[in-house]
Length: 156
Image (cartoon, rainbow, N blue to C red; front, side, top):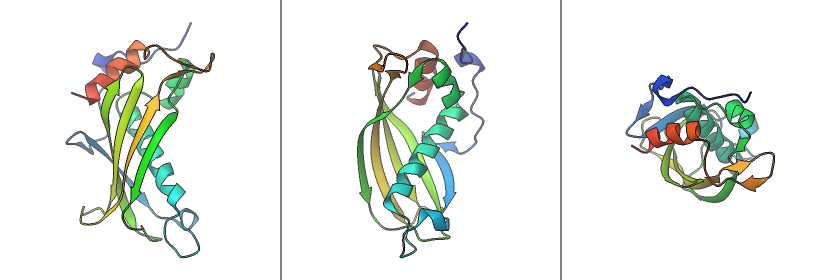
């Protein structure tokens, strides 16, 4: 018997920071996130965006472990990132994530990494994910129904 996600009616957001369709994820730049100059290394921003997306999905009842158990993976197939200014070691930042569009099995996300008071913008990015059948290694024809139903709630 394959694991199932909770039915959409049972899924309630558990994180109160979902506002204006954005999910806010707080980070602090630790020494291991930075390069020799004390500025956040460019790849660390990608890790933060992934963490924000995984937490956003978890907050609506889609854990990544459940996706894996269902045989579904969501790899990044397209990434566009713009670095506006650097986060420095010790600084706090907010990673804002939202699903901007879902086209079949393609899921587009927008990101903003900014200061907690929203006065400084550090990074903007767009990421496209595609649902892949983990066993076959091929793009799925459609999202698993429970995943699609949960994601549809984000776009409304």
